[in-house]
Image 1: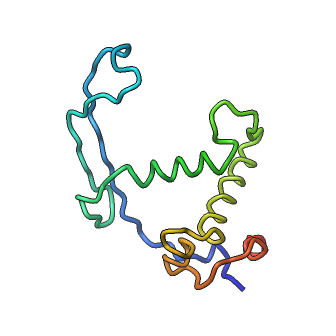
Image 2: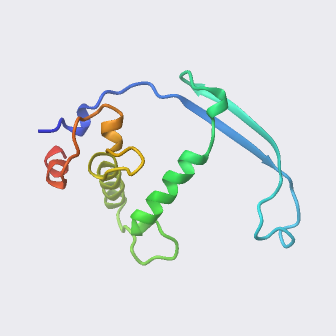
Image 3: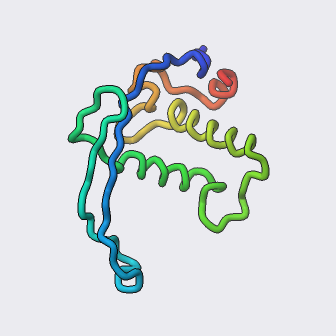
Length: 131
């Protein structure tokens, strides 16, 4: 039987920030191409992260995965949450399924297994029981 999701340890994360300063140009001329980057500033907010590894790639990939897997986050959709409580439940279900049930092709296991939170791939019924 898996441990409850609320029992997962609460470690202090490495929190970092990247600020990009873009060149200001006419919108019509550069409508479909990105503006030139003038400066990139990397800041450590908390923890002890590697400054060189501060990037937006991981969070942008996570945002795309969420939009592709949850219909309520796609653009121009009629599948929306009428209540904030329903939206929160849908996002929580997505992340629980993604981390505990769905096998990552690159890792060849679930992210929870790779992180040492669990030692096996959960079934959907395990996920429901843990909630």
